[in-house]
Each structure stands twice: as C-alpha cells, then as structure tokens.
Length: 276
Image 1 (cartoon, rainbow, N blue to C red):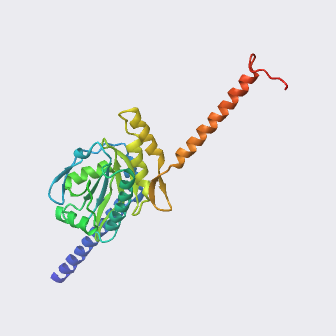
Image 2 (cartoon, rainbow, N blue to C red):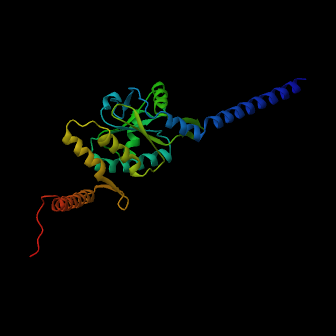
C-alpha cells in the first residue's frame, strides 16, 4: 500500500513539475512578441519621460532633469550579456563619434542604463564602459533601481524579459528632445549614422527656436548643408549647395535684367530705334 502511495506521489510531483514548466514556457512565449514590442516602442513617441535619477560608475547621481535643454540618447543594456549588448554599445559609440564630429561634442548627451538591476551595479557599469574603451564627456553609464526601471521602461517603450540564458529585449536607442519627449526610436545592432544624426540635426537646427534672425539663418544652413557622405561614412559641410544657389541667383538676375531691358525697349517712349 505504501509503495502505491509513493508511486502516486511521485507521479503527481512529476505532473506538477511538468505543468509548471509548461506554464512557464507558455508565459515566455506569450511575453515575447516582436510586433507587440515594436508597437509598444512606437506608441510612446511624443510622450514625456519622467525625471528619473540614476547612479554612475563613481556613485554620483545623474538625473534626466539635469540633462534637459539638449537631446538625450538612452540605450538600455545588461552587463552580463556576452554578445548583443557589447556589440550594440560599440556600434553606438561609432555613430556617436560621427554625430559629435558633425554637430559638436556638447550638443547632446548619452545614457547607457543597465536594466539587470540586481547585477548592473555602478562598478559593473563602469567596467562595461572601460571594456568598450568609452570615456566621453556627456556619456553616462548608470545603474537603476527596479521601480525606476519599470517606470522608465514604460516611458520609453522598452520591452525585456528574463530567459534561462539572460534576457531577451528590444534593441533600441531612444532619442529624447530637449524637453524630455520621445522624438525617435533607433533600432538594430548597427544603425547607419543618418538614423541618429538626421533626427539630431532636426532637433538642434530645425526644431530649435532661434534667439536671433542670424542664428536662425545659421541653423538653416547647418540643417541643409551638413550632409552624409556614404563613401566615407562621415558627415561634411557641402559647399556645392551655396555654389548652386549662387549660380541660380545669377541666372535669375540675368533673366530678370534681360526681361526688364526688353520691356523698356518695347514700351512707349522707350529708347528710339533707327537705322545708321
């Protein structure tokens, strides 16, 4: 009798374990949905992100509120990731370098945030940056607590969930405007420079209210004349636009002069025509 009870107990235990594993698998499958993650990411555009505070690698506080006034790029990673997050950060660093060369070192800030709150301590974030050889002003590698992470993730539309091997998550960099609103989402492990630099140009030169008419004119020049050169992978100032504009103005002026001269000749009382 006791042997039957042991067998029955063993069978029930196996069924419970199997059921729990099946439920966990179903939950994970239901959680991971690329279309839903993308839709969530896109839905927050125009939404204002809260003023959250983080800790950098030196234990100093870094707040989003203190970074307002200039665009901010937010990238969420986890430091124990062995491939995707290091690659994403290294590739982002290349694009950030191109953007700074084109727009200025102080024109925007970058926040790399560790979303594995239990493991991504300030020391781990500092080591992660050091391993990528990233030591740039206005680029902060920061830690965050669980509650802040949840609210921040909702604000920027970032999806992630735990797996046996670590985390599955959306690969995105979120660009905030100077007021802290989500302006653009940049996706993929290796985005092309224009994916980030063009919206930054719009924020810095196209959307910004100029203090003076001269500043407004300079912003327009920078907006249209700082262009991407795919052959070098860099941005440059394109003088050909000015040359084309000058030629256009000269052509227009010459045409106008010819029309006015012809009109004056044909108008009553115009210059007399005679035969010599």
